[in-house]
Amino acid sequence: MRLYSFYLRYVSPLRSNTVIFRWLFGFYPAKALWGQYWDWTTLALRSVLRRYLKPDMALLDMGCGPYAVLSRFAHRKLNCSAITGADHCQELIDYARQTDPESGIAYVCSDLFDSISGRFALIVFNAPYIEAGRGEQKGLFPTSLTRKRFCGGKEGVQTIARFLQDAPSYLQPGGKVLLGVNHYHIGREAVRSEIFRSGLRTVATLTNPLTKACVYVLMEKGNAEM
Image (tube, rainbow, N blue to C red):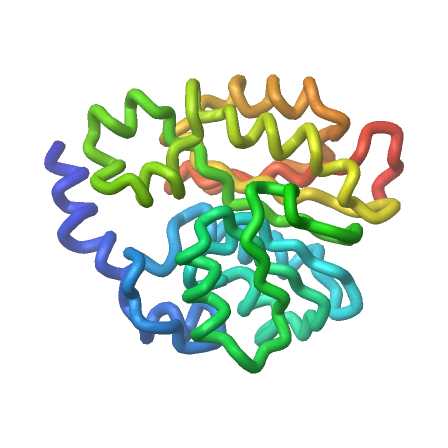
């Protein structure tokens, strides 16, 4: 409990600091109307994007949120020009679009892939993975919007399971999915089981042992890594 209190007091505010954000992601964010700018999974995905994203690739940032952090990082720092940022919350995607009118990022309101067209070399997803009951018990869903954004359903994997089932149909040949989760909130076996059931396989796993943030690098089964 003392450790969590220390975290809330000294560490959590870093995620709302615009100077730190600029240092990490290469641009100043819009006004923080919708909570903190990033979480530990965002940082893990940032590192993996640096490794896998090339300027000529088509990128889909699923669940981009109101600040479109990874989309705009990919545009500003990695020189990617073919970016789609998607989120299922209309008010969040509207805010992202209004506060980023010049990047050329295509912002789409979509329940996962429902309104997505085309195929992508990389699909990045900072998934909602907080288990419904645990989130309610710990007060992590103070509003209906917060619950909609961060609740992963039963065992925290319902949204991940839906995403993994449809993702292969939106990948270019040799394309990759970068699935980000935090194993403080969701068990490894639950995630790995859903990957096993999907049409994807794990080709790399990158984990931060301190923050528990983890990125699974996935490709279609039967597809050799390029």
